[in-house]
Length: 191
Image (cartoon, rainbow, N blue to C red):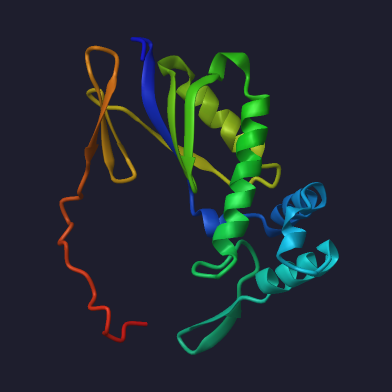
């Protein structure tokens, strides 16, 4: 890393519940039409897969204080297809963002895990990149927040990334102060 570069991370605000389902379905259909490898796993046609996906994503019901509600936007937290749909949409956003980013906001590194993105970028480009990312989703649903390194350190996922004086980085395991190392017993009933 050079002196004018920093470690930065972007994160999507509430990815699952803000994933625009109709746009995600368009992206999925386009990918299914381009890549026939999925035909090795099923005899369903693209239209059948899309009809099933749309049904699953548009019939999410939950109860709250005795009332039944239907989720009208986004994918359901804990839904079986939600992670796949959100990840495919995020990959589409990434490709679009990188292809359209203005030259002055170009990144040296972009590594994504679900909705968390680790970057190496010029320190003067962070605000501009964030504005660009927040305009890539044409529905306006997906919004990014960011955190930049402080004192040459950045928390990312369960890592503390430390920028060393020799322009390399050191990765350390980071544990939150609230971590108790206690887990539920596998045999317990915990819905």
